[in-house]
Length: 81
Image 1 (cartoon, rainbow, N blue to C red):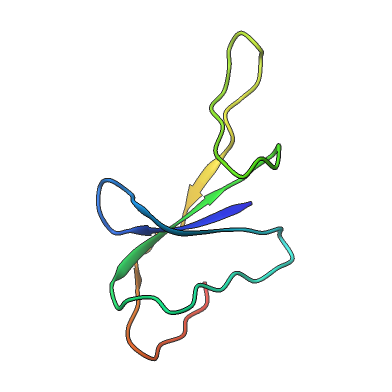
Image 2 (image 1 turned 120 degrees about the vertical axis):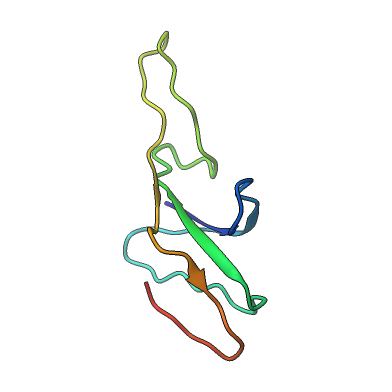
């Protein structure tokens, strides 16, 4: 899986990205106090990026999910989702 921390805007600019498996905790340290979105990409082939599907080659695009709430980061703040 790829966990991406995104700016809270329509462009979804990636601030930081971490690769992980289901058993590991992901930590984003030293963030500026702002609002962020979290995006999860299920990287099935392990290449470190989202791959679109191909009708001709008969494979689906990799799945993507978002944490439904906006994460508000404050100074000296810890949170778990």
